[in-house]
Length: 300
Ligand code: SF4
Ligand code: SF4
Image (tube, rainbow, N blue to C red; front, side):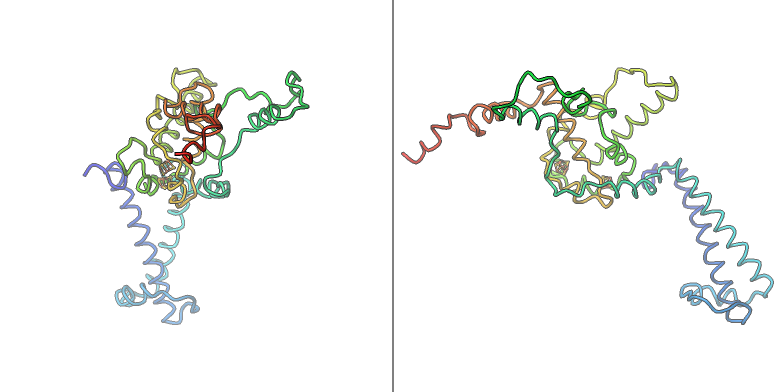
């Protein structure tokens, strides 16, 4: 067994030892406290069902001074241990415990399946449909939505802060992947991996910036180098992953933005989709026949 819960075995052993020591300190503190309460040396407070019923018979053999000492020593050990752990959290894989709070706060509370429209595209369509609009009018100064630098996401720089936060908040529990129909039917997609790969790329970019003072092009992108087109197009956008996530993470929004890049920047949608989109554009329906022929079936 090389790993335990995703940790290398050596690290996992240390974590188990530390957790065991903290729990010993916790029960020592409570049991000493309980016995001292029973002797009338401390005011009665709280109930300690485990300590009182299981450990108290052992501790009742000890003297008062030892019990006071063990209660204080265990209290300080536990207290310092928790402070240490809180600081260690930031550097450890448990960082997600802290980041889960802001991630949940900023979670998408819109109805599942409601996707965000690009303001610039909405404007463009409104302009096309407005007979009084001047198609040659220059965009208003400072109107960034009128001329976006890029559609969709090709790299982590193109993702928003909540998506990046999501990547660091994932506990890697795999609930999303276990309900993903694409994954279940043997496709290459795993929503959990989408977040993990985004985080890996983010960390690589962070190291690049640390080493060079600013980001120096490393010839890599999130798209293709980390997340493949095959994974992106395997998604059915069913939202099962976002429903299943215990901390309301949204791997689908990353998939969606990367697909948007493929379609709007590279025209690299699969052939079937291109055909469907061309039909919608020309026939106002996904089928390959003219609007005037829609009722032909009724004549047969
Ligand atoms: S939305 Fe996509 S990634 Fe999420 S469960 Fe459905 S198919 Fe899988
Ligand atoms: S269900 Fe949420 S926390 Fe668990 S692996 Fe998936 S995205 Fe991460």
